[in-house]
Structure formats: C-alpha cells, structure tokens
Image (cartoon, rainbow, N blue to C red; front, side, top):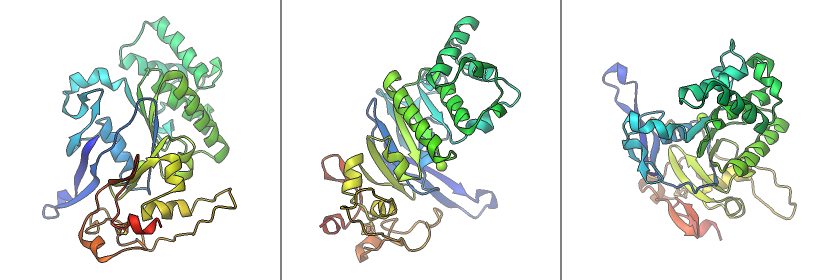
Length: 318
Ligand code: SF4
Ligand code: MG
C-alpha cells in the first residue's frame, strides 16, 4: 500500500462549501503473507475507510494497492472480479446483512453462487465443511439468523467469507459488539483458521488490547495518518509516538514491576474537516513544541521494523 489517500468533500451539496475531509492521508505500509497486521485508533480516524479502500469498496483518491504485483486500484471492474474472491472483509455485526428470511445454509450458498463456485452438491458439501471449521454443528445449516447468538452470527459472518477461500481477510472490528468471553473465543477461532487456511489478516479495532492478542505487527492511526508501526512486542514495550504512549497508558498491565505513567490526553479528537496544521496530534500532545505546529513529521524508522512520525521521539524515549 503506497501513498494511499481517500479524500472526500463534505457539504458539497451546499455549493460553496468545499471542505475536504482527508479520511486516509498518505498511508503506506505492507502486509506480509500469513501475518496479522492490527490497525488501531479512535473511531473516525480512518481505519475502516482504509480497509474498504484496500478492497476498492470505495473510490480511492490516489495511491497504489498492490496484491502480488497487481495494482488493484487500476484494474477494470471485470479484471478485478477474480481477485474479489481472494480479498474479503468481515464486519462488526454481520446480522444486518444476514437475510432474516433465509436459512444459514442458503445464506452461505449465496456467497458461492455469486462467485459461480461448484455444483449444487459441491456447494452443499462445502457449506457443511465450513460450518465445521467455524465450530458450528451441521444443524445450523437449517437455522435462521434470529436463532443465533452474537458469537454464532460472527461465526457465520466468517464462514460466509472463508467459504470463498480468500487469501486476505480484512476484519473490521469483528469482536467489538461481543462480550469479553465471546471475544476471546472468536479471536482464538480466527487464529486457528489462519493457521489452517494460510490467511493473512488486517485486523481493525479501536481497542489496542484486543489487537495485541492477535497481531504480529500493529499500526496506529490518528486523523487519517499512520503515526506509528511496529512488531507487537516492540510497540508495547517501547512505544515511540506520544499518541501510542497515551493509548497504552490506559491499558492495565499484569506485571507489577512495570511502571507506566497514565497519560491523559487533553481535548477531543479534532474534526477531520479542520485537521491541525503540522503534526495532526499537536492539539492534544503533552510534548508539543513550536516545530510541531508547522511541520508535519514523517513516518520514519526509529529502530529495525519500528516506524514513528514524531519530531521528538529521540528525546522522549530516554
Ligand atoms: Fe507531539 Fe510534536 Fe511528536 Fe506531534 S511531532 S506527536 S506534537 S511531539
Ligand atoms: Mg470503523
């Protein structure tokens, strides 16, 4: 993913008002095959928009998204179709998209029919296999969505995507609507399936402690920008960006020997319509300096495989 931008006009219908929202602003990173990349940040920071842009579920302003060498953004819709099957997205609550009048079996079959996969018989076999993979008994084939719990619905949400044999699955807050015990069941299921099916995940969540348990690497977003990226352990042990440090300072730690000062951020997330000049975080940063108000810090490597976008990082990590 190179220099990805997704801008849109807000209030364009009022004619004169030409405010531009930079929902995703010049984001570059890569996904390794077989890894889980966690993407965190407050709601409205552009994580979901980024996820959708990668799959071309919305129109991207500029940038490049390459999947095994092919630039997805420049393909015609027709050329994109065979790739669609390999690039899939799971949403927070699949319930709204599960047709209440259809049984689970035919909901899952629909996925296959849309992509023209298998004969009737083959599809049926595949549905029973995938139900088993996501930990549901065969009888769920005959159930209706309203008969399922939240966790079971998310299993169906997963099954609907995995039945297509995707390579990359973008999980957008897949456990945020579930209670804690069910959350960990679904996360464990995602990990198990990743191993079995060779999946690559982009795992989007606002809660950094949820992301921690599944991610190999984590990217932190703030107001449309990627502000820090590191391997999970490195990020938790040695966060560089003040925003990441604030996020982590709110996470309880089990180890009593580790002392972490609670950093309370002042103010609210600024409106993406009027993002601050210079460093987008400067209005809330406890370490703000003059240069921060003028110059936008670039995301640069601060140690191997660890990138941060801050003018101060050298000083504050002492
Ligand atoms: Fe804070 Fe300045 Fe670093 Fe931005 S660049 S995070 S305002 S210290
Ligand atoms: Mg979202």
